[in-house]
Length: 376
Picture 1 (cartoon, rainbow, N blue to C red):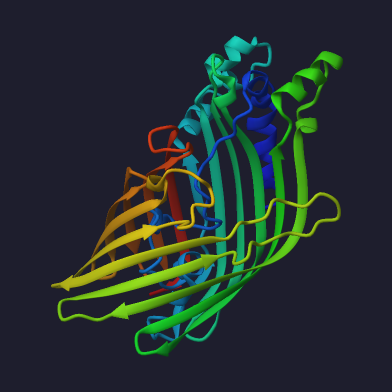
Picture 2: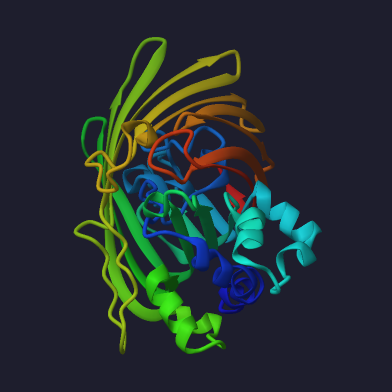
């Protein structure tokens, strides 16, 4: 995956970053703390799963769900490539010349790039989720450019540009410590490559005034480092006559996951506490699961409470087909899962809020994932 952020940096950033910075203000995009790892199947139901998770998904949504099925083998994943792209990136792929013209004035750049949210995210997990121990290798890389610029109110204009690659090993497991009460933990050893913009527009203008040939790479802070992180989770199952309910709590990157580098250190992965509930019922071979999650319950990102609310409904026919709908930060989501034992195909369409309140900067995204191996 080492090549992934480099290609993104050579395509999106060099041809857009300079002009965006020239017209941007001092504000920065404020968005909910992102989930380090995700799965397409859960994105389709509003990015929920804190209280309803098992197999590979549990590694990323609640480690207390690992081994919860009671089966000796829940998942053996040879590969699980996942790709998520913003809708506006498709325009970039169809018309690359539209975004690679460097001879533009600040006004032309503002007209062409303003309110453009370019995001691409690739992820893979290879490993096994067993009854007593789960382990695997995870790779993730993403690039994001978010702009919301207003020349009449530069102090409240938003701009964010970054490219990140995370590679590492995850080991986890869970145990039922009391009837229907499970606790779980993940240990993560990660290497992080983190490149992001840090220069202010005023400082950039000063540089350009002195030097006319400022290079894009000089505007990026590039860091690399290694770190060890921990995730902990709890699941409390409440069996019923017709429906089963579950309450879940997950703490990701407990105490913050920090990285040690030779020089500048990558930005830490901040602690994030999620809570969720799930209600499940079965009717003639069909399973209906409703989920409700609140992510980052301590509001570390200082965004609207509505940015933290996620809801979903999954309707499954036996174990073969699942259809999903949900709400992610106030926006509708939809998903489809095909489960063929040795191959699982997942698709999701959802919207991510990049601003401080729902409706500020919605970014429509598509996600696809294929899992090859043996799954429940």
